[in-house]
Length: 163
Image (cartoon, rainbow, N blue to C red; front, side):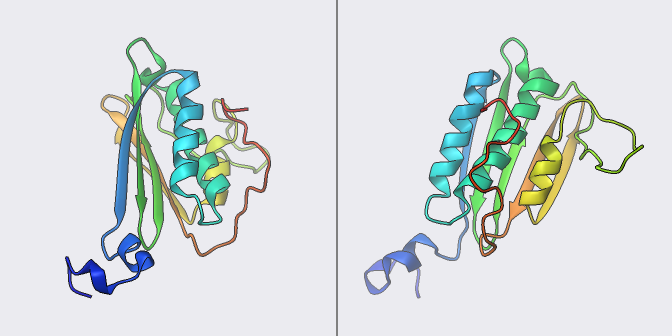
């Protein structure tokens, strides 16, 4: 299919063309903005069957940004980036100031982490996860999701600020 000749394609071919779709939004670093980010991601994933999983991932990452970084401070903000292509990526960027985001271990006797199990929940819903950045300049925590897999979160709420 040639570029620009959309009259010869289906709506699905146009919508899910070769280029990934990408959205970026910035939210004030307040707890009420976590729900707004969550709803935005659920809307973007509508029809994939993974709406709830993606929304939980976004809410957990945004919650961590607000609770554990300078993003939750006065004039703080966090950024959300969603990419839909062969795989989907949900990423949240914070302002740093906290510890390196780490998945908490389920193994008894392992060093406990501050907070709950948000990143562990994210890792269960994602194909892969990662983090880059620094405490000084901010972190981006991301989760790649395979939309071909069935939904995993069910109808339950995650342990984030959206509860």
